[in-house]
Image 1 (cartoon, helix red, strand yellow):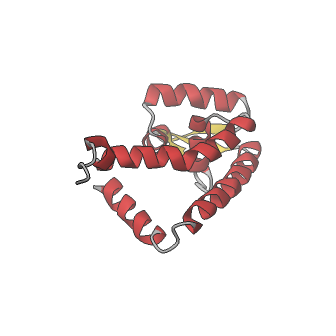
Image 2 (tube, helix red, strand yellow):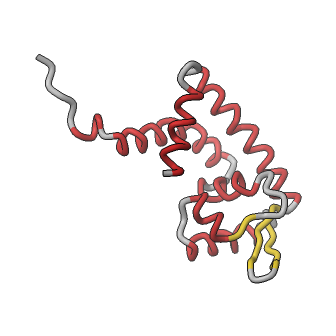
Length: 139
């Protein structure tokens, strides 16, 4: 008789974390080769196509970072010429500069190709998997 799996081998949260790590590893290596840290990539990806920009709080939520850490990252990215801050009323909106938008466009193209290759191995399950993950995220 086969023993039951260990807890972490069948625990949804552990499986999600391990799947994310496995699915991201090759793309994260490409980012590193281009000199882009994963947190900076997340900011670029979040701002890509964001038009009027995003607030620091929205970025923090989307990029899974606390606001003080996010602010330091944004300071560095602004100093590198990748993004700009604009005050709109009581909020500060973050937008990509032309240089940041060009980098984001290039990286998003690579990310889409990476995702397509990954999902091609599981084409029949991909739509349901994405729907399930969105449902989990929204609560």
